[in-house]
Image (cartoon, rainbow, N blue to C red; front, side):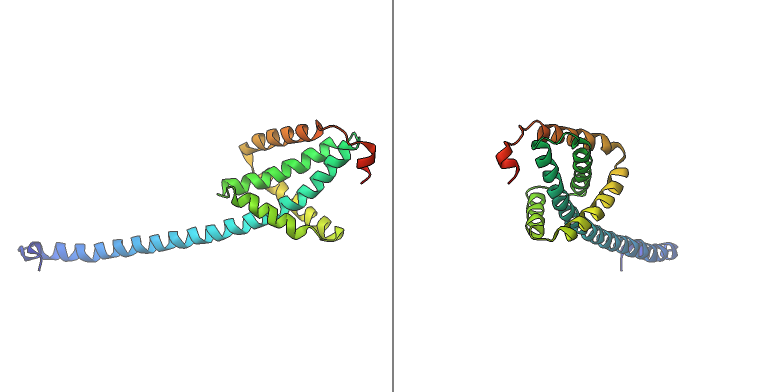
Length: 174
């Protein structure tokens, strides 16, 4: 027996502290377990988001490159569409970054999604892009203060794409 438990008059106070400490420890352990479970759930949610962001970024990138090709072939009114699509792609990628996705894993996921979608029929691709644009618009709308860097980065990317020289007539038709 602990020496403090032998003191006269202290037995009831010490006995009361024991169960209280056990309850506090039990609550702390339960809280830790719940936090671990929440972290695991958050990790699973983030992983699902990374997969979806990669799938959508790959699909939207196909349309982005098609718009760039049209611009390089001389089409003049492509910029607003290209900016919008680039902005939505950056919104998805930025959100994945904020949730913890980093390179090289992010780039590897994008490459895998691109390879998976390579031979998809046009209708399946168009349906996915429509879903992804709606989802990415929600991500962008909820970005708050992060909209400015998204817009800025998208604007610079579009400027870089559009500053490329036009394709010669023979290669534009290929």
